[in-house]
Length: 166
Image (cartoon, rainbow, N blue to C red; front, side, top):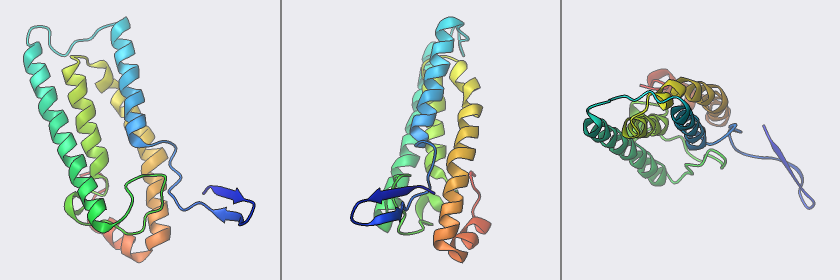
């Protein structure tokens, strides 16, 4: 838990999950490392079917953006912030959250894999498990503790019925 100190208020608790970094940044760094490795030692996904690779990448990225857009709509409808650094005012269990507790991170993963296919490189895909591990430990677990503390039994019931990923 982080704390902020202001002269008028003294010590106050900052209401957020305290994640290590926003997931898009974690995915972005993983992808960038993969592209750098690809420059040093290319491992193409397709040598002769680059168009098919790009088309597959476009489909995956579009699917991921669609999932993330549905997440944004669900958060807006609930009237709570999507940012991992701002307070959560409502537990969102509608839209894509009926199927996964973390649909936005799944959508972002689809974009990541789609961009990897579009760049015709295995390297970002090989780096993806490290990014996912960092998201699991530094984001999801912190968010889950935060939501359980904030919403109690309501969150425990939701978590018991909806998978973390899919």
